[in-house]
Image (cartoon, one colour):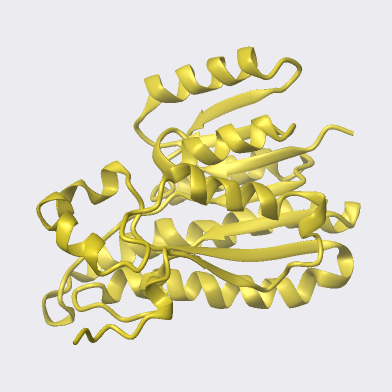
Length: 249
């Protein structure tokens, strides 16, 4: 039986790397994108050509638009998906005393509430089949506090708590739920930190940012047969960052 996976935010960056890795592993992949329509079309066409027999489809969807999200979920509720990777994310940096409530809530909608809505839409089919994999892309920001990161960290912390609870609720029905917690990844999202990159990399034990393909490789593993016993886990992929006390002599 063909196995299909849904990936949010799959048009570029880490999401596109995840779509590539899953297609190469033999999965059919549906992915959502918000604004990178040309890149999404090119990615789908390329992967179908490179992986004969695979189906790869991109769908335009703004996860901040609750109406559009509901409509998308209603459309997929009757369809069978083996896996779901929630990669789409929205950053928001501000000191807590200066935090704009509307921006914080917008980040929570994209990073967390859209995940819960999509899980609900996909869960019935997974439970009925007694087989499924869910992977949420979290962040080390939810594991280690950083000034100015409260709102974003809270969205990823909520993601972790929800995913771990979902894992224990569905484990006996063959569904595995895990969270990947990346550190700094070399994507456009970190372009705002370009001026500080050298100093940031010096503080990471491995000494560099992660490659999108490294995060994608872990996501692909969690969809594989050998990963069936892994559930309820939060797996950092951060070059040793969270293993280190952040005070240097």
